[in-house]
Image (cartoon, rainbow, N blue to C red; front, side, top):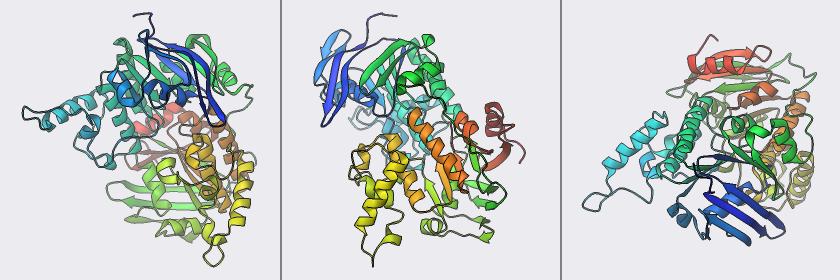
Length: 500
């Protein structure tokens, strides 16, 4: 393998109004190696990959491709030079098929210059098979789970035969099985001499797949080193600039003697079947399972977002039949969705509105928004949640993922929710923000409230949950008390099933 860098950044700096996003960044990315970028949200990782791909142009410094200076002005130019990106935020098009998404803009043509759909579907089928994906190339994207959409993004990047593939949080929506399939692809790309930039907040997987690591803090390179020469504890300390004494937080003295939610035989044809479980006051119930197991769909049904065909729900001992989301909100149930940008936030609106959204009607005066209340309440929760934002009038899309998630959680705390359903609550956010959210969860249940936490991150479930409900193919395959739970037992129930 060549020792010459495929891509080099030489003294790159980039500023935005009031913020120096990158300060004198120099990094070499070598062919056949997986180079991890690690840092808190806002550390500069996304800005680096946007400079490399042509979304941004550096204010100072040089970008070199195989030793030759380049200045990409858009992503088409970088893609033409062999640089492809798997974005954290999904960029697939819902109303196109899987095959159409993968070959968008480079569709194979027949002799008559029309799109060769047969060849496109055949090549897509081979590509999906190489990723162990049992998907039909003609399936529309809108019918896929978030995990499958992410795998289509990955398939599209792999299909472009690039010399560099940038992966921004590629596993954030994936199950353990899909992560294993992705790692298989990465190892194949590495063997073919492809340079890979890998961004993730999951330290365990960084250790498993990475060769080199650059740690960033506040737009500066703190350290670049082979991964074999740094421990996970050192990674975290370098990233946050201080020693972290605690990461997971488990509730203490939370009273768990009252059943607040009792679900019996919940079913929806073709989606989930005979789902039964109980949630106690002061409890965090973890929900695990492979992508497509039906976890998110069950939570949406309880929240009144999707209908059910059979089964019953009791809330605090009384029958509960939510016909809409409003019914659930009025009953004190809040949902933090898996896709926070697509389903949980009004991206073009400010922090204040996103914080108070679930409470505006209750606090309105004859149908008019009480702007004084909105200002006071949102400012209070910015302080409570330690949300990093210039002001409550900042557009929510300009905040980091962790701070966006804090705003979504704040919305339900402000609305007085007693039961929180958290679907992948720490997806795509850094370790410091994760620790803060775990602490908020601890305080929430210690106050007598309850949480259902859906997560594909097994260390997270083992770190904060009291019990684990495992789902498989739309059914409950088993329950584990946290004292007996392990990654192996959870994966066994997820893939093989078990006894309820």
